Length: 347
Image 1: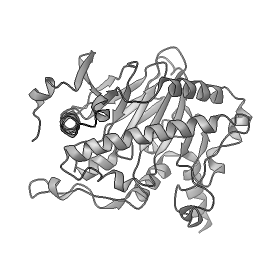
Image 2: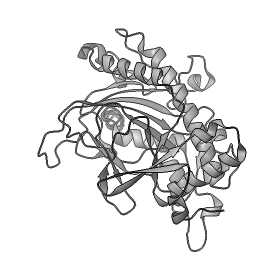
Image 3: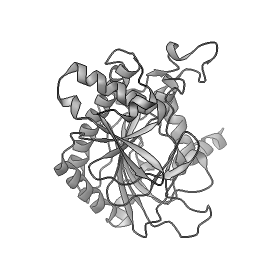
């Protein structure tokens, strides 16, 4: 049974935080740990209604420990405070697997002329050099790049990666239930996911800037769902279904979860991918951590039959997750654009 918008307002699994006229849904995931299948299904139905009518959500009672979060926040702050030479030693262009450090100005949303002024550290699923997919040179499959000056970063980030991967697997199971699919539908397509963990640092955006700089340009994420933790200062902005941008507040104890392209494609935009950006006008340096839950490289994403009809034809051609992510990286990262240009010139 599909929950109506009015029923959603009274749901026990959801509370709302109002800011600037926006009522932000905060979904409690406590029921995931009850082992009560009836309660899990009720939670899934409520979450599905949020995805349908609102298009993004926050989660609380998520099960990720405060000790881990405090440790991770301290570790990434120490990384960004390293001398430039130590960070540039793991510049992302030096990794054959798209892992490592990206300085300010080397990334921009969808090839926009406006450069992001953030700096980031990117990592993904840690695979051994003798893994079959690494040996086969499959895109984005490999080992991470870690700074020699800070060896402790590895254990902390891998720990956080595992915890957020589990959280997103649990959320994607709720998605499957809400969409009338087998419980494991999305998890079965995310066995060796292209999921990425990103730490980002945003300087204060120039006041009065009219378009020459932005923390992170408007975009949607590639996968099923993302988890964003604004560790210290707000700055995330979300575009609602009516096209209005609003500031997504920092709410302690919660993560912000925008929907990604893959779930939008699978549902033929019945659930839409959530556009978002970062504008840091706080007067302070802003830090965040985010996890992007992208399915397996060879996973085919296309509109599911139940969302396609004569009145609602398929809006997307079939593709694979690997191709979708590769196209996005090619449009976004300066080093990949330069490599493509050099390759084209060689021919």
